Image (cartoon, rainbow, N blue to C red; front, top):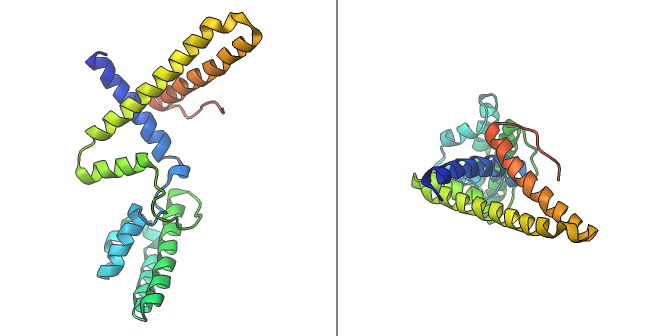
Length: 197
């Protein structure tokens, strides 16, 4: 594979993976206990400083969040059980406001350990200040998927004329192969439309 082709593939795969994975509400991680929003909220509650949390909400909700934060700090003084309940209520309030800001529904706070690996890798890249390892992983995964779909489709095409069943098998592979590559291309081209499949 030439260096130029690999760079183009890198651009395609990275853009498609990040756009399709990170922009999809199903892969949201701001509502997880180990996601960036609640992790930062835990630090803010420990320090008593809400300032770092305000970036996660619109300016119009700063007052409401600050009020909830201050009430949480007061309740936390009543003991461990009260602190746990107050923290959980504050996390829910914070995430609900943040999700509304994103235009996404609030479906509750999720337990730790359920963040998609792609999102974890994207966050790790930011923490380390280096994205090359993540991009290489995305490119390798894209290349494997595209090559596998291509080879299966090509093999099925060579047998498609043997019987209607073999022809249908080819069509099934063909649809998956073409739509997969079309979806990637549409992301790169900035087209929002894609097939339902």
